[in-house]
Amino acid sequence: MSDSERESDSEGRTLSELAKRRGFFFPSNGVYGGVAGFYTYGPEGAALKRHLEDAWRDRFTVKEGNQEIEAPTIMPEAVFEASGHLDGFDDMLVECADCGESHRADHLIEDNTGIEDAEALPIQEVEELIREHELVCPSCGAALAGEPVEEFNLMFETTIGPGSGQQGYMRPETAQGIFVEFPQLAEYARNQLPFGVTQIGPAYRNEISPRKGVIRVREFTQAELEQFVNPERDEPDLSRVSDVEVTLYPIENQREEGREYLTTTIGEAVEEGTIASEWVAYYLGIAQEWYERVGVDMDRFRFRQHLPGERAHYASDCWDAESELGGDWVEIAGFAYRGDYDLSKHADHADEEFTVFEQYDEPITTERATVDPDMSYLGPEFGGTAGEIADALETLAERDRAAFGGETVAVEVAGESHEIPIEKTGFSIEEVTESGEHVTPHVVEPSFGVGRTLYTLLAHAYREDEVDGEERSYLSLAPEMAPTTVGVFPLMDRDGLGERARRLASDLRESGLEVAYDDSGNIGRRYRRQDEVGTPFCVTVDYETAESETVTVRDRDSTAQVRVPITELSDVLAALRDGGRAFGSLVDEYEELSVGPENAPE
Image (cartoon, rainbow, N blue to C red; front, side, top):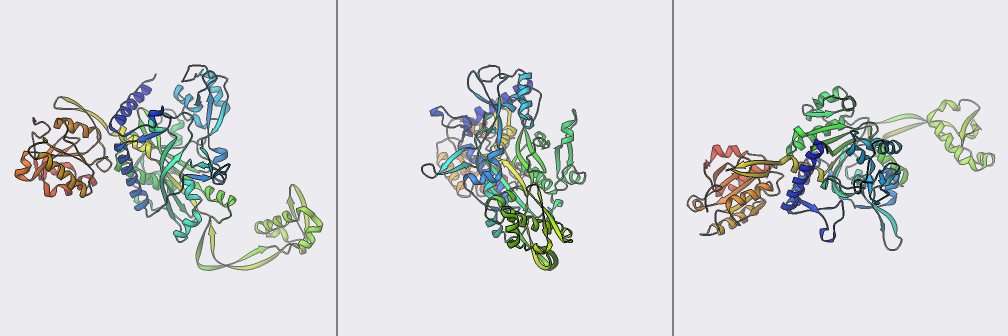
């Protein structure tokens, strides 16, 4: 095992143990043996996840002025036939002949060789690499050389309705729920581009080999934005993010061994052509600021450009946000310019227009070539191909009106050329006044993995130190993200301290704060429990409270403590949570304790 693998395993075990012990997340259905790839978020994890989703919604829906929808998680087969998921949503599977376990072939190569991005390799090359590196089954150790590598579709099938019903699938991404409703959503946007639609919700992928806790699972939460734009006119306001500094890993740097990352600004990256799409660049800048806000360690974060072989066929440019976890780089978001692929596909398959009518400032008069074929001639003359010939004439008139300048015009149908007299085509040039045009919007998509981001926050926030000669582990979560904002304790549950502390906890909850009350055990142990789940502040009711109507407020990271009047407490805590104040400002304003309740005997 390499050093990076040992580091990854160590961090993974530490976080998994913490997550299960303190109620962040744990494998589901354990009483029945569990099923790989499904996790339950406990009380702390559900709260952290909710805060993360709220922060994403605040930035990408509210502040960007976008709409939000909630679409069904099960959709009919026709949706995924149109989107291409039925034919192209596959991973590479290799099955062990000895134990019957299935494994994802590209992951076996990446985990056991120095090769990266094996997902982009053709199946034949993957089979050769398994043979060349003598890879074995991780479950039983049997050789996998010679075993076929096959494509495995990742969608969960289901039946809609009783009996044989209608074939359906659990959505593998939230995006299709937005695309199929585009005609209705465009009406809500008053048919004015650009506009964006967001959605936060579950998606499902029948992963071959789920692993690494909530990093690769079969049910997960996505937060996606589909930005619809007119490619000929709409541009983002790059000035808002032009000075945002980012760490990029473009294609050129990935191909040349030893090349460092590129540290630059969004504005410079666009100007130099490193990021081709201004819209993608805009959302990289917005995302960079948002990741900093929620507490991702920027020294363990980068944007990596997709190599041509791994880029989705519909994407002209695509970048991933990646975080470093235990020595490995893990994708936590993707940013793609999808063009008009999605809307055009659904328009081809559905009896609906997936366009926006954009009105001109003033009507435009143009000449248009049209045909009105004489079917009484074409039918007897060409029989069953007459309709196709009429369609070919219409297409030719739109493309090359000069072809109709002679006595006959030639069109090709099914590889055979046909000569049509001009007078039988009904060719003419007409003046047409147009008040606008139908535009098929292009789509820019920032897509965030909520579970992977949550795991990143835990990994990047985990700390170990020593307080009063005692080892301590804690989560240095951003106050806005922390599952609980404040822990409230009585120094001891007697002499009325417990009753006063419970009343205070209730008052703080009424003011909108998330509060944990604890009167169990030594005050130091209670602090440690809250530190370990990332609670940024703790309030202690002690004997001085009755005299001065003040309580101690303790900072998680520094363990510094100050006395704050109860009448000001809820406002102070709310400001600390929302980023309006830093704890250091309290030290300047209120009495700092050199020996606080954390060290006081009970």
